[in-house]
Each structure stands twice: as C-alpha cells, then as structure tokens.
Image (cartoon, rainbow, N blue to C red):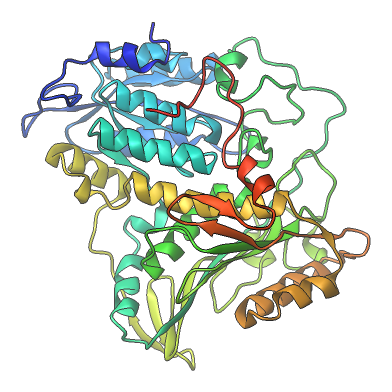
Length: 489
C-alpha cells in the first residue's frame, strides 16, 4: 500500500531525465483509462462523481477502469453498473491502493473539498494526470502545493469551472477586454440561489457501517457527525467545506477573475454577511457580500441563500427557484462585467440603456473533452483552466471566508460607514440589507458579521498588517496523520 510519502510514490514510476512519466506512452488511437475518486451520492443530489462518470464515458477513446469511495453503499452499485454495461471497473475504498495501479492513466477527483489537495498531490506523485473538481483547494496553502506538484511531476492537472466550458462567456470577456465597451470598471459575481435549512440534530448522526469514516475524514479531524445528511451538508461546515462561495459561487468567482485578466491575488479583501433565516447545524454564511480589491478594476461578489421575500419561506425554494429569487440586471447566478459604455451579462453585451449589442456563441469544447484533448497533446497550455487558475480562484473564496471568520457582529450603520468609500460595493451592501429586510430579518436581533479589511501580499500569498496574525492562521490547517499535505511536494 502507498502510505502517502514522496519516496513511495517515486518508487512506483520509472523516471526519464528526472521526470515522472505518463503512466504509459499513448498512441493517437489508444484509450485513456480513467479512475473516478469520489463517486458520491446523497438524498439531495445524485453525486458529482456519477455525473462525471456519465460525461467522460461519452467521449470516444475514454474508458472508466476504476472507482474509489470510502462509502461502500455508493461505490459498489456504481461499479456493478459499469460492469453490467460491459466496462471492466475495479472498486477501491482507499485511493492509495488505486494509485498503485498501472492500469490507470488519469484520475477525476470529486471528493469533498477537504480531500482535493492531498488526492491531487498523491496522484501527481504517482504519475497520474488529474481533473480536480471545484473548489480546487480547502485553503490557500493547499492550492499552492497543488500548483507545485503539477509543475514538479509534469502532470496535466485541470481545475474546471462551469463558465470556462461551452458557455460563450469567454468570448464575451474577450470583447470587453478589447475595449469595445470602454474601460472596465468592476467584475460582479452573483450567486442568488435559495437553500433551505439543513436542520438541527440533537445528537450525533450514526456512522453507516458501510462507511470507512477514517478514510472519509482524511486530512480533517475525526469529529462526530452533527448534521442530518453526512454526504452533502458537509459543504456548510468549516472542517470540510467552504460554504456557498466554494460550492456554487466558485464558478463565478473564477469567471470574474478571468474577466479581469488577473493572475495574482488582490491587495485587500472585506466580507459582510452571516447565516440568516433559520437556526441549523450549518456554520458558513448563507447571505454575503464581499469586496476583492484588484487594481484597476475590483471584484464584487454577492451570495443570497434566502428567497426573494418571506412569503416564499414556506415553499420549496429549490423547485421554485425561478420565482423565489430576484436578479440583478437579469442575472441570478452568473457574472456581470461593468464597463464605461455598457456591460457584459453572462455571454451578452449591452449598452448602458440595456440594449443588446451582441450575443456570443461558444467556440470551445466541454470541460471533460478539453481535459482529454490536453492528455493527448501533453500540453497544459491546451487546458481551459489549469491548476494555477484553480488555485487563484479558490484562494479568493478562502480570502473572503477568512475575513468573515475573524470578523465580529457589527451594527448596520457602522458597516455602511466602513464601505461608503467604495460606491459600487456600498450599493451591493444596500441590496444585502434590503434582501434581509424583505425576509423580515431584524439585523438588531440577528446581527451582521463585518470582517476586517485584510491586506494581502500577493507574491507571498500571506496577509500583512492589521489582523494578519489571526488571518494567517487560517491559510492552512492542522493535518491528521498520515493524511498530511506536505510542505515539500
């Protein structure tokens, strides 16, 4: 068994000129043998792993040869389904055993967030290429180590985000960057998506006998399961997830950074928000606004997890999301790029009067097809989103979350005073307060958390100045042996 050390992984692969090679030399017509790590399933969704199995299985020349999940109740039926369809697939509960296989060329990682970094680093060390689902990392330290591992072992590592697929958004961004709408003013990400309460348990939820909870927990501490749905609601708990920003918001956070053309972290961050509307086991904010101080044009992001107004609270928000959420300039979930002479809303360009100028059609392939294309070319430059893109965009999520986590409950007037120097952000904050008022949430009884302005040193990827000592403690985590993200990959 692989025990997660660099030496053990290097022993697994012969080296050529000091470079860990691809699992085998591919001919133009050779099948690419994929493994999916993290099959996933829940009462709420079918599981991202299952979605990726279906997507990759449709691509000619790709075979799913192995699956891995510490939950046998999820793993075994999917392995059997593949076998019933004529695909010979092996099942593993421990990814270290899977990575020892010489019959796997690349892996698709759809585990919970807290496993993304270590799974990617181990895979690179084992000579496998990687397609790692969003968000790339669980903290900023991990993301940088993933970038280093991809470079050191010369792996093709994709970090896909929805807008970079066949959306037409990239073509719209290029139009704006060419100056067709004048100077770019700011990028605006929206995640107006209602989510119901995850409930509140009175005692720890029993661990299923089919689950290896040690493997599931991995780098995180072994904790009682204080949530009803073990396999989904980890998204809203800090040891495993990154909240709505890291779940759905990351797609549009990445798109905002892409639109701005930024390949570094911003100089400052500030977050305003909280968890409103219900008392449940979730820890992460469900309603939030944040400012990322890029120069010359900043990034503003809004998250709304509540419906449009209180009248919808008793309804099924998710089934009626088209009617229970408001929008901003016609967008509920997506990106708006504000310019001097107009704006981009998703894949469309408008003038300042809202008249459509042009709609952009996608000229690229799907995220999955793009990954396979890069595997065959052996060129990371062919990727629509590489590991560095994944790290930088996820780091924006982490910066916002860090500002929130070290913030304090603050009266609305003081919040308004703090943000009034940033006109567009101040307007976003007013929408935030109006949204809470529409849901009859009294911020005097349910105070808003104002995070501090945190200053980032982009090259070092560390906070400096006021509050930096507390903020830097959240750049990484205490890892549980043997599941340790190494300082040297």
